[in-house]
Image (spheres, rainbow, N blue to C red):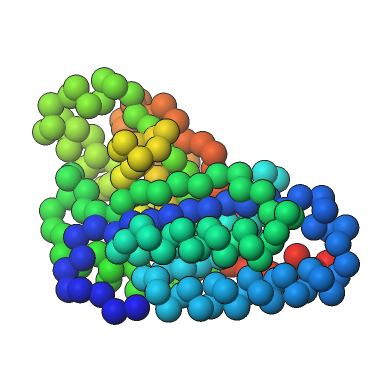
Length: 226
């Protein structure tokens, strides 16, 4: 899709679905038809989106994760409808969220955010909603900025952080959380080591929610036919 210069914010949408037992009981040829329809629909929709990616879940509670980014919320309605029509009664929505990607108030800079979405797709995807304690927002801004600076410095300085892309998105007033944090990476062990180190930073004191956790791997849907 074409975009205006200097996008200051981008809407991000995540939809996580679970395949009902009826999916695995359906005739393999019928499943193949449904997946072909889903792939075709998503391919057509990709022309409209800044980013549209699909993942197979690595957790028990979901099977398919879809992540989309656009300058408007309107295309997300079509995306959800496409998922439902392709999977029919076999797809059950487990989690869905809308959030806004924009420059952090604790960081300098800004500019066109779409450039951060232009990189090559990574193998793995991790996302979760996050909420902070009320006390966090009552702290002076300068104190909060220092706490977040430590968090960012520890992450950037970790020897295994290379290849991990992070998107902190905001959902104040849009959901049951205040943030939706999204990551892309090619190595799950490296990702896990960085997360473990970040458990030691001061900012952890104010985090009250980090679930449900979504973990997915890039997919071509073929294993849904087995």
